[in-house]
Image (cartoon, rainbow, N blue to C red; front, side, top):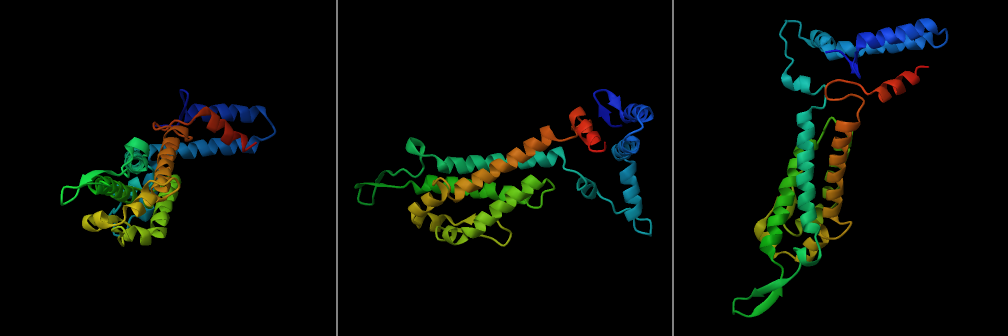
Length: 253
């Protein structure tokens, strides 16, 4: 399928620019260059460009080792963006649950009964552990899907998450949260529940703390994906916006 601009294909656009070229003595070579670029884009859209690349990189014995995975690397797919958005949303939600304050705070002390039946007040470590575990799982999913992402905004945000985790690894370890060689978070339930909950609170509920900053990075992933989906030069059907086309054309004249 050829390049389209509001109902025009690449052939008609080329004709348009060619007619402009013939009626103007200034900027003629620029118009010709733009027409050439449109022709090149059309070859990419039709698959001719990919076939040329595949032919070039095919081993001399004739075996075509190009796989679906190789093809997918040539572009950011809708499936990838949906996964990044979903993982970022889950991570942000998990972090925001831990950030809640007031009556919704997980770190508010509740009435409890000790072994002797006496009433005391303390943290509900079962609930806090459950939500921290959800956070860790969501974080791991985000790292797996976004590390080395083809979309620079996603890649940068995930790299930032890994940097934050590394910087806080010692304090995380003090409450039973370890960072594996693969970057994953692992929460030891027994150690966590016995640890100082004020430390966990400082990490996950404090504005500007570890959890807060991870949530901010997750929001950056979502923003990057949404921007790519709605604000790029090309739509999902391969059409190019007129504004972007004219902007590109203007740079040549």
